[in-house]
Structure formats: C-alpha cells, structure tokens
Length: 112
Length: 111
Image 1 (tube, one colour):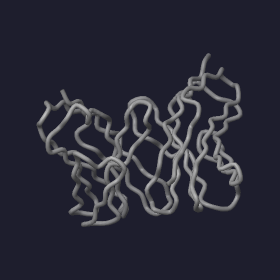
Image 2 (cartoon, chains in turn purple, brown):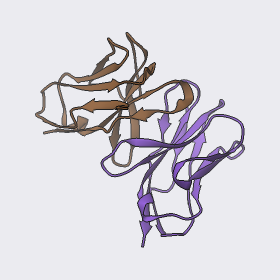
Image 3 (cartoon, helix red, strand yellow):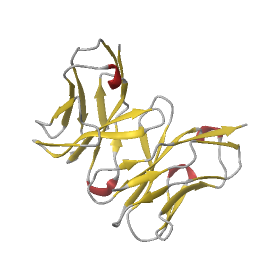
Image 4 (cartoon, helix red, strand yellow):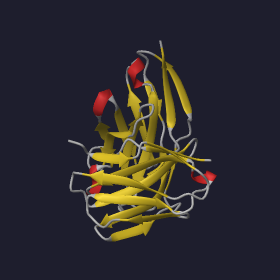
C-alpha cells in the first residue's frame, strides 16, 4: 500500500533563509507526486507536480522539488523564504489510481 | 472562474442530526473527491467518483454516503452525525494527473 511520510511537523526558519521540507513515499509502482500549500482557513493550492521527465520540478512562488527514485523522496525547497510563505505544506502521491494519499503536513513558520 | 464551490462553509449539528454537503465544479472534471482534514492526520479520503453516476469508498467511508447524479455535483451526506465527524471537509476535482482543484472547505462541528 502507498504511504507518504512528512517527518517534520513544524519547521521554523528566518526570513530570506533557505528551507527544505522533506517528503518520503512508499509505493511498489511508478508514482506521480505533488506538493500543495494551505494558507490559514483556506483550501489547498497546487504548488508543483512531478509526472515524468526531469527530476527537478519548478513550481509557483519560487518553490522547487526534486524527485529521487532511489531514495523514494520528493523534497520541497526554496532558496529564500518570505513571511508570506508561512503556511502548511502537504506532499501527496498518486500511483495511477487518481486517488491521492496525503502526508500529515508540515507547518512552515517564517520568522522576521 | 468559480472552480470548486462548497456549501455551506460552516455548520453546527447536534448528535444524530443529518445534513448534506454540496460540492459543485465548473471545469468539466471527471473525478471528484471528498476528504476530511483533522489536526495531525493530514487529509483522508472519504469517498470518490470517477464519473457521473459512479461512486466508491475511500479510506474512511463509515458514517457517510455520497451521490453524483450530475457530473458537476458531488454530494456528501451524514445520516446520523456523531462528534467524531467534527472536522473540516474538502471537496476536490481533477482531470487525470493535472492535480486536484480544491474547494475552500466546510467546517463542521457536531455537539
């Protein structure tokens, strides 16, 4: 069965510092991978997705993620964060069934 | 572009009451989903639909029913609400691997 692990429940980081949010998945088949962002009291918005091809995926708001098949990881990175990036971030995996399995989320807190 | 619209946005129910949450999408998406979001548990799939007239169970279907009589609408019903169903409910729709488009959520409290 598929599963998604986001080991860090909370990540505090200072403004303009780099950040990495970790995501590991388990699946015996090829997968599609997604990162979503949720701002307070809102729904989830798609940040980026990996379907195939280049393992480095660029998304909105300056975020990028790298698919590593051997380590079954899809970590999200941003070289310089802003206060407005404070939100909860969810990693999700789809093994081709069109049903996504979500991680438990990582709360990014950007400090001034 | 409305995208995915959920109604109502907030609701308080007494234990044993029933209600229906409505999800409407205007993107002609085939696939629609209902998730619940609870602190520390991420999003868990309740039911989903791969097309008009079809529904299937997800990870946590007990206590819920769904219907998709029209392609654009996906209804989630609670026949007899329980405090354990206090949660934030999200509807989403998608077309293949484009990624989900989410609604803004319904915050439900069962007392």
